[in-house]
Length: 366
View (cartoon, rainbow, N blue to C red):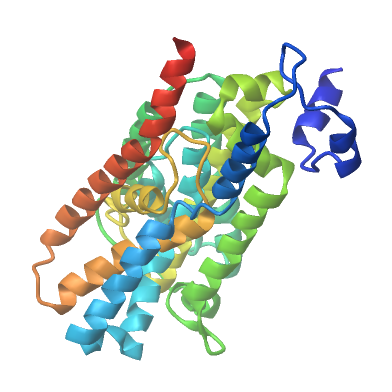
């Protein structure tokens, strides 16, 4: 019976029109519902269907920023600078895609920057013993298994707080990277494939852009069109209801941290292709920019709401802001300040956006 309930809850197909016509519309006292109420409900549903997506606000800001800079700083829209923006945004976008999965379940992964550095150091060691292509494959599988297994097990299975656990693993994997390298940058020959993905071109298309498109499309398909994606939204929206619907919430939580670890590891491999070196300091502070971009893109910190498209737009907005500050000659020390201010703005916007529903819930409880 529980399985039947789960299939019914997951079935996205609406009831047929014939069944709707046959069922009389009555209230609990068996009296007909007022026509005005039915019309009002229909209008409300249409309004909800036509409501702008949560990332529409940051998209508008991004367009206005580009237009303003195109007028006052034409160098911003030059092909060379656009190429720089794409390459600068590539790694944060890949990390942000994994972060989106974690935040959608109501969690967070603060270890992504450290995992990026750890995977780069891991790859630099393996590259001395095997071909770079094989080293990349082993790194992607091994680091994902190690990091995803630790974070996923402690958060998903044991039930510990994601903020505390990933903050701890942030320090652990950063410390391992320092210990293995003795704090020194390791030179790596990335080979043509890794170079193309990190900083080169695949035909006429920049390699980092190609990686973003492929990973973004796959992640978007998983979230929108698979049972696992629906489970992710369900767990973040209401974990208790998801459990009652037969969803294995522990398994879902564990899996999203494997996804986040895989994206962070891929980001580390891309950084090797871009820098041709592995530094224990790589990705330091990157988790702040990634979280800010995800939240600016409309993903709700409490979980249940968010899209991959919003994450991409949010991170590109932050990258454009950083690039604009550089072009107009503002000190680079202002860039983390701008990121922090935008993160606070995103949280405040999310708070005010949810305030009407919170008030409605309080009235229902009374």
